[in-house]
Length: 416
Image (cartoon, rainbow, N blue to C red; front, side):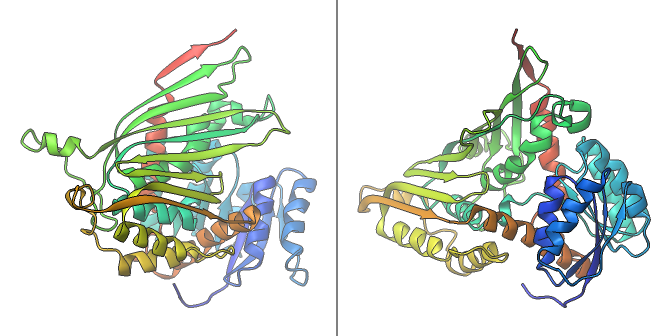
């Protein structure tokens, strides 16, 4: 996607490790210029600035602020990137919008969907670009899986699961304070709800569970969500609720999905994230918090196998910000929405053969950076084109947060 080049002055509010990562990703994009950083300590601010200067050694030194509110009120800032703890997202983004800034928020964007929606309305009123940093759908493997599911290249989806096992966060960190983080599903799980909603459809029912340790920390949470399935017609989702007359037909489109998150791994243990999608004619496995390995297996007609191969062949092997767009452009032009109706591919008259394909992307950090850059460039397009709402829209972010809220409050077991 091409659009007019313009340099926007960026201020990053919040100076943790993720802010330093964002500064490094921002440094190679000519559309943006880091102008200011806000953080509570000199050490943290310098870490962010060092990440930027490593790639832009000749730029003028960005201004430093201790308070995020000071940065937001700087008249020389065009775009505010908020990477503070979640409980500050709603109030700081409201202030930034009132000051006439464009805003890119670290997820979740607020502790409640209602608060995020209020700020979305304010952004519309102020005519400012406003987006939440949900980056997984900017990964080309995630995009490829979406097209396989939507076009039923392995038949209808019957069940799916997401397993995310991460390193334990230090006790006493704000992550464990639900008044500051919202809990695992709100602070972290929204990334995966964003993927799940676009793969499987909108949620019809959601129930969340947690185990509270003797320390009071809820390090393991899981949810069962019933998604209302998608049509095969491109990227259009069913929106009409089932009537009594169509109930049996509509129920065929429901997909149960389990989401598990555990922040329990010891520091030197390998983390793991894996999607597993079970279809009528095979399964899809996607591995990595930053998705890097895709495995597809099934028993497929020759035409299905050729289309999957052609789709996966469009995935770039090296990190690049427009990788997901390459996959989408090919699929939009080449995949027929009616090619793989169940009555055609499941028929005994259709010859089918075993199929296996693995696709791996190296350079995890490079792909993470490319996804962050894609989100920045998408924001740039939102600023320059008022009719563009982003690949990941504000409606998406609100829906993801609403689902996270539904999953967080259901049932708890107490240890100790």
